[in-house]
Image 1: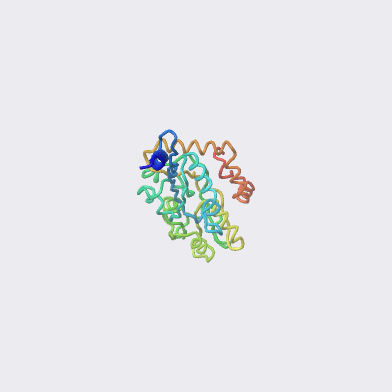
Image 2: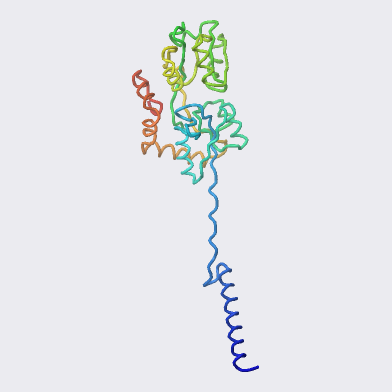
Length: 284
């Protein structure tokens, strides 16, 4: 073989060897001089929060079909603290505790009153709202004050699974209770005069009266005071501590004042006008 051809073949072989080595370095991560493939970041774990999105301005579905409101903003704060991605699920109120206990959701933030009865099956954070049970009556109802509800034969409408239902069953044993599963149905019973009163929380009573001012009256003096809190499964002290820290920080930073300005301005003014403490004023 001529020298020139042998030299050319040797150069080609050397070049091929360099190409193989170079490719090997590029495909092998962690080797000096090679380029490792960028690793995908792990997905952010979800924080699934259950609520019945039928209670504006705390939790409701907006015009774009998104769940929004005070409770959603509180949920986002908690999710940020935990380093998790919030996901909100719209669940009927009387199914929320079951969803929590079966692991379908991680938290309940749904204007839920922290009661001793509920504490038997789930745990609660520190309160973030102080509310009370109030009364909605028709314009021409005989009921002028809470004591009038104790008259034998009174007909009272209540929402299923609420503290209004629990209170009425305990405190008004002589009343005829009508248990329904939605706010509009309860309001309609009042407007039509089919019942003497509806027992529900102050904010709801206030808002429904505002929607029907010519047909209803609102008796806002609380039948009893209640607090709302975040619901979580029992036996999670670290999670509970982090939720409580978030609520305390958010309050100290003026977060609840901002939520009141954004969502509850009319309600705050109405309660102030009647000499009642606003729902975010826990110490009063």
